[in-house]
Image 1 (tube, rainbow, N blue to C red):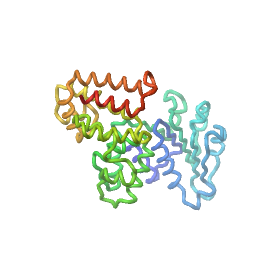
Image 2: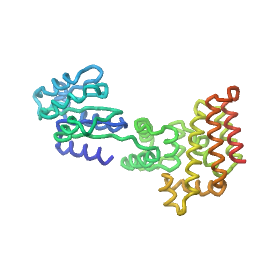
Image 3: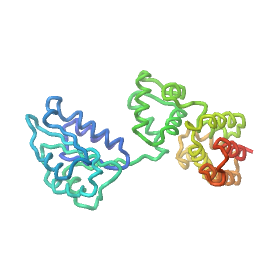
Image 4: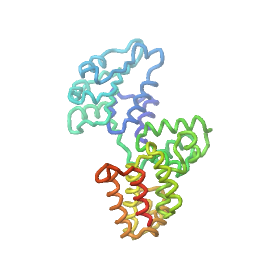
Length: 334
């Protein structure tokens, strides 16, 4: 995020590069930077003659170069944005001819999603010399919660830890989806609000009581009543609660529990750092560690693997997914 803020700040201060090559696995920031350039560099009056958006599937590298070499009309700059440029991956290196001597009055933006160019080749070196190459890297799941908090803090909002986890569990690592849902929340809640699980449930539709986070917590506590209540809900709402996701999350939890047992230093800070979790959730691992010794944890991981195989129809063609889950949880907590 700091790299993106620097790019935005430089553009706002008039330090505008002739080429922006935006690449990488995470499309969210590529879109953010491209949209910012599209919206801000030219005035509304200038955009009509001096701003164009091209799509990689419809053009060639030669088309990009021809458009980039044009002079602006009644303006100091022209902006050429190439979206979905990854469709030109076979010929993208041919852009090096232009990158070695770009048109100073053109701002060329290349949106090269899900891929990167070879940093050892001439194109990368040429753009890096005269323009800017930004690589948007995919965040790991354990980084998403902090990302959500930072985004909200920047807009004068707070969020409870459980609400954050509900978003991560439901939306995964798709920053665009998460951002859209946060925007919905910020429309209905005034600045300065703290987003709670109830807000998530009411405005996004994620249950605050019947979700994998609550199931994981109940399993860790060996709370039979809550475990049964949640898995019965899951069995009746399988589309919203796919078993493969539940098994994957439980497997992650018990794998982390195995790491927890191996730690010599079980202080809250070290546990949070070693497991890659927010300090708020450390107490869940301490409780589960008491309820599940290392030998039992190893057995549970084996049970989860067996259930995963059954959930894919191997050796359990006639068993409903809900029954597989119930059998699995019974074996885990007893």
